[in-house]
Image 1: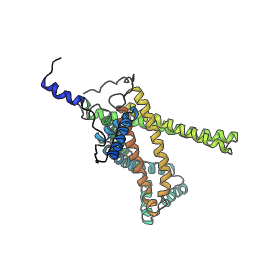
Image 2: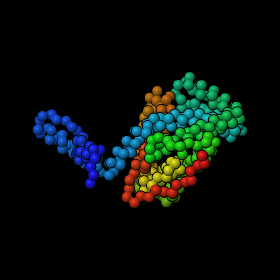
Image 3: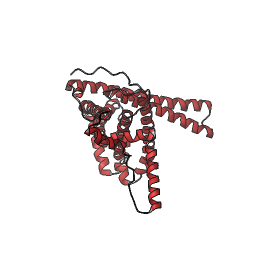
Image 4: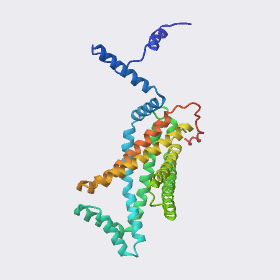
Length: 339
């Protein structure tokens, strides 16, 4: 077998044992032995397939600016709420124009949730103006909501593709004409809205049906049945989350993931999203008890919710992309877009 200078230089590096995790020598024999044992234990744990996969996903998430992309998605998500609120107030004005008493109660309830009198007065004037000028506000809000929604979808797509690509740099095939990009993002946004409506409807209908069945059978007073009902409701909610994330991880990446990785990563995202919703449900009422929390708690809560959702989505995208299961075949690719 020929041996050249290059091969001779590479050979020692191949035989060199891996560097220990904690390379500290204190001079104390017992302490050094314990440090070495702890280092070897950590290395064995890191060699477990599930832990190694988690570390690969975390490394890709950090190397490909997952936190920064998550912050950008949070910003665009929060920014998109303004035109959505404009459309909502305009729609309320059209629907309740013939019932001024109900409209006044709705406005008072919205304003009553604000503890600061100055902020409440400003909000009341803003809502009244939006309702009185509902046609202009509605059309303007609809146009802004469409533009901000398409931009939000484009940012989410690029962030997920950054985690899903084999290499960090974009290649010439990723360059698309602007009209194709906006058309594709509009279609994707429409699909996401439809998927969101389906999942929310599924959760709502299943919850209502469960409550109706329990009341019809007279089972609402049975204490031991409550954990089972809670488990059923939780399973339905996780299933709805699963459908939503399955659409995201299947439709948005340019290159299709492997089947097992996609299904398991989607389940991880669905469970994580349910944990986020549970934590937010438990913490927001506590935050709202303070005066500052009553004024800004909802805003901070929304920003935190969007940020955790974005980070979870991007981390699971990295987890799917770094999965390596035996016999896991890649799903069929879509035709590439026209240059």
